[in-house]
Image 1 (cartoon, rainbow, N blue to C red):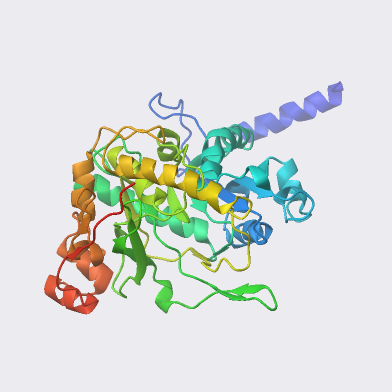
Image 2: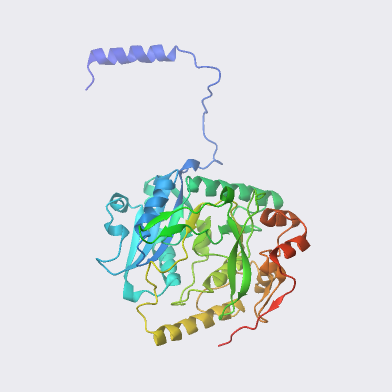
Length: 423
């Protein structure tokens, strides 16, 4: 309880404070307009990172590097589906370096016995339907709003300040799309004319198998890569290869492929279009099927001009998710999954995921330059040029504005007719 002397001193201080005039530059608002929502500050935007892992020896190192290289690590939330041999394989649940973040609900782990693994699609779908809601609930208590989601592999390295770079590029492209649509779309949500997301095959880092050390592979000016179609595989989906963007690339451009090892977009896209289900042991072709689903829901794939991650495509250092299945078992199940993917690419109804109504399968084929029924791909698809690309996009991708020069550069002069394998 305040004494009489303390009350007297407090009154004197208040009187003196009220007699001091405020500077002219300071304005005190009387009330906050109702149209401005009082919510989480803009600088507290969070990213949810989805990582499926099958007995991957580099999963802990991937999460550590992600946090170490981020500018705002306390705004990152992880959803990891670990399919491990308990007590033998590295786990984020039992890592000393990540122990506190697991306790503080920044890292959520879905542990599955390795012999119950059903492939990467199964793991990604579990992360989006089980772990993402948990992370969003936990983020509210930390005054962070999960606005974006990043899908990567469990063997990934990150560039310094990767989170700031990719958010900046995404928001800048959102503004460009908004201007193109006359103020009616392009913020990446899919509710407007053209939603979008970033994707592409990450460049490969070098790995010393003797010292088990990973290091960056230097790429010119940290330019990213875009994707080109090369040929068809058994389930009717195209196979892609990388091609480095030209040194004149300054903004994102359209991408004719999608890589599950790097997808970045607004979290609403992943909630609206969850990953494929009921396609166990599918590994090739599911990315094109997901790309079709995103496209028909109004989301267009684009390539970020700057590298933010690198990965490895060498599988000799980690077990395969097919290793615990017999050859007959996995062939039967994979054939069934491939047939479902094939049906989806042809626009048929399947139990692996519904197509959207914003764009059609025919529009997707025109965008890709591919006819899934005939099994043909255009020379533009083989050059990585989409149906939406303009001459300016050719300059971004190749540094060449003339289409004939691009075709000569790629050494492609005619369409390749490749029959599809039917089941």
